[in-house]
Image (tube, rainbow, N blue to C red; front, top):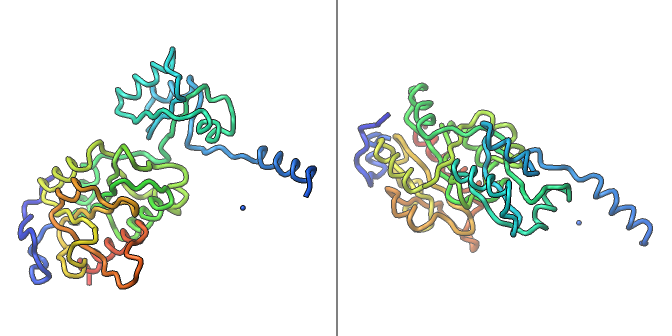
Length: 284
């Protein structure tokens, strides 16, 4: 679907509407045993070579696979090959990392993160907007790695009427159990697409008529820009922000006014401010 009325690229507020879119030895020893026996596995990880291989053969959504360093023989090779064929991220990690994730269970050098929710395509997000008779409202997240942040963003986005969220396959957290919990149930109602290339996706969205606004420090305030019409809001991690290439491919940059000495915001807070300004401009 294409929205043809993408125009007035740097439109001001006056052009609003013209744009489309933390004793003793005995007690301490007892305490340690209790901690070990109370370890709870993340329900969204699989471990063991057979379990991961079968998941790859099926239709389960796998965010990434961790392989113990030095394990590159036999079935591990098949797992890596199958994962790459499905464009699943494969990372080499120390054995201690896998021990930590599995509570020292026999992981055989392989752990997979399974998505807590099914991903959709970008096109499905746009189709949802069309079915509702609304102009597309998309949130694009660049390198958000904290699952609590992602969960909070999903919760806010759902309540603000965002049609979908787009995240990258690499250098970003996927739809983990922690994300689902942090979203307070909103993940069940939010469409999330995972893409290989954020920049290419932005270009394709622009071709379909969406305006892409980047949240960063060096733009006009979000209150000065026209955020009506079909729009995609790009928010980066609080550490690195939006990458240079991603920023260069956005239509314009918008900022949140800062009056204190700490000139940064938590990513979920920044996203909340951005999406609710879109809501304000569209509805009030």
